[in-house]
Length: 464
Length: 172
Image (cartoon, rainbow over all chains, first blue to last red; front, side, top):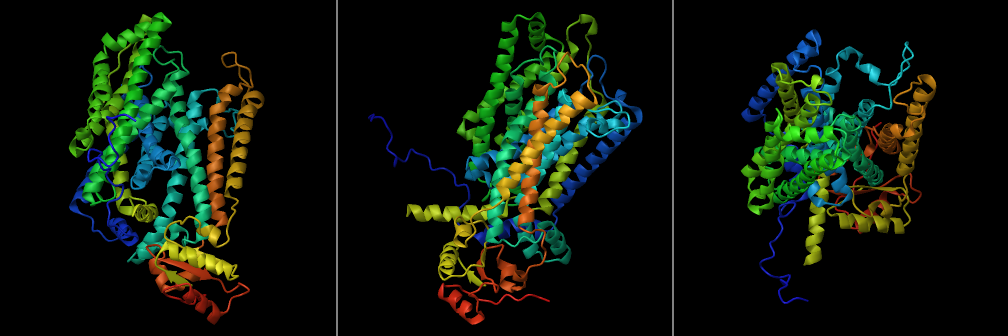
């Protein structure tokens, strides 16, 4: 027992922010969250935002239609850079989706109460991110009308997919991820849809929520089976999350291209996915809680914890960058060494330095509690981190392809208007879906918040 | 059907109902309560077994599909790998396992719960329809129970401190 140990009742021990602000009852949490869907009128803010996003989705439609008309030549891809923005965007969006499942499934298994108010919209974010990601593999092929070749079906030509290719593994991984996320989200929604059905004022709301909630009547027997299924899904979704981005990293790691063929990729990609995913959850959570007055439910504790997870995964990503260099130089393989040097002073090195600034340097600010508790700083930082993660995928894809084994095969890549239009279009699609979600479905899990109220009540009684 | 204000009241009442000899009882709560299912006599569910069987089906099916495609239906020499290149088959096998296990878990849970079931007599109780999914807890003793008697059961519910005791009628 050391003399310098601080006693536990010392005022220096900071009180932790609550996960749920005190003073709430089952009815008040239900009222507050359900009101956003059922009774609150569409404000000018929502309408203006939705109009903007919708017009950007129109841009996406035009970009994809033009792509199908003219072919992938409208993009900046060429030989040797056969993969440009399309793959960068695909990996970026899939990565963003991972935080939702981590919050829903992994934090559930770890019994973390702070997941309750953020898991619903984070899981919705995952679904929308996977939807945006899924667009790219379908449209980036030279003949997208033959995309169905990737699925195993008895074809008249006797063809079957090449199961030894990571591109096919991707098909299965992303399809599974989308399906399981949807299932998990939907059964999580069932009790809340029943709540909305019971409280709906207008007939159309009653009918829609009535159909969607499947007649859920909150029976204890049903809850028992429900909890069993929920726990099993959480247990299944956890390795799934880790495996999906691993399979996506295999798109690169299985190839022999220098800069891609490294074993650090799977854990480095997964950590990077969680990193960018949490950044996106923060980007969504901050305006959401402000616009709908949900600060009592999404408290500083949530923002603080999410910032800490971002910092931790950011450090893992930093380690990934570091070990990439170490392994390249240590291997002595002249192609790997050359590529490592190209990242530092090749034609795209300014992207690499921007990447280091966004992903490694600026997030170190999160060590400071003042930064973690400052809402504008957190919001800005989350945008910077997401930009950095996009740059990371760009650096991985483009630098390795522009400088591969033979100098005669080297090339340059520059993105065209249509590359940017498609990227911006998917951002618009993502945001539009979020706007619709926030008004159509409860953005916070109502039944789980009630459980939290009960739990907080019990723990208070326990301490009295 | 009796209404209660707190989960503890409902738990106590459920246990007393079991002790009194009622078997066909169900409780309705706006969120899951620990120990309640056991208190009303419901202990074991098939959901984990269904999930496991789904996972096994998916895993064996996924591997079988790949083996059949790669070794029998469309054999190709890819990079000198054997036709049964099982390390390369692992990712898809894993994904199929998870996919089928999840599908079976959800469909199994819904099927065992007999959902979708838009109509149930309990929705005819006005207070239930308004409050069961907000902040009130209900205990329902079904008429098919051997010990059920309209007056006696109502008196029993009042004795375990139910605040509103109502008869649940089926709309024909």
